[in-house]
Length: 374
Ligand SMILES: Cc1ncc(COP(=O)(O)O)c(C=O)c1O
Image (cartoon, rainbow, N blue to C red; front, side):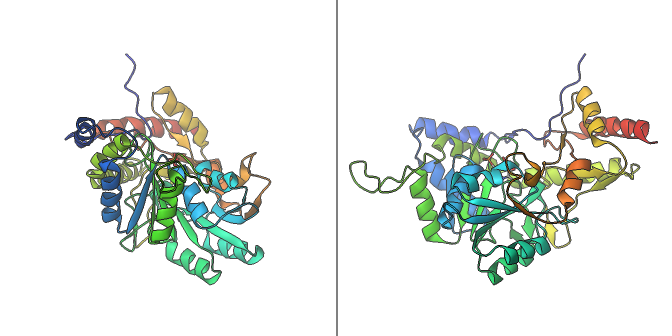
């Protein structure tokens, strides 16, 4: 008999059925067309949880980044700095606007943007229009240091907190430090709307503009009047209903992810070849994915062995400056992220996993590592 598959991170609905409750309400009231009360409520409820005055619910985290860049005035020919160690969705929207990405390397402790490399990039590239900082795998970046550098160079900061909803830096939520923050509710994220995103900002005008662009830049006229290019980026009322239900159990999910991370460390404490990515002092991580690097062990063989046991794991993100599409663009750093990519792995971090699943995963890893030791 084949064992049940164990996944990296998959949608996990609330036990109490909150998502169903909010969707049913929308169906009963015939609010299934794009706009509706769930959207307004989801924006308000998420903003209340993270401590931001404005939220705009959209169809994806990528759309939120795109609108965020537009709000910051990014256009053709502008330069935008972005963490290189990330998923392509962080920087694709730079190219949607025909602007030019410049990639900045990771530091060794958080794996996030290295403040020194950022400073070098800003000093060598005048007229940078924005910085996109990613809080990867839920670990907060050195946000205060990075914000101070951005302020000194008078460049606005967009936080890509797609993976870090619920993580804090000195008790403040990631995504609320920059001029703009974004979250993703893609199916693999800590909470999901089946697909969606949110832009948050202290700036009321940015939020208003983002909402306007997201609804085809439709002017307030009875007829359809358009003075600007628009997008169909608004979240649907049904998706927002799922989001409202998921928001109620966000903290439970964070606690489970933290438990999974701690169990991996405990269960694999006899494997010194693994170096874990852990939250720095003063920060609190949602541990969206537990990650580690392997010393002297080919992690691809570990991933393969897990796959043979129906267990999903992944290599770390391949840095953007190594991607065929992006390698023509600028890069600043010392190739720390190249090394992370070459040796690292995302461990299965599905919140539906129980202790028996964690034993199963760690047994396979232990056996493989022992076999691979020279
Ligand atoms: C770091 C990062 N940024 C942006 C995104 C884009 O989010 P979405 O898939 O909702 O467009 C994702 C995830 O998919 C991500 O991991």
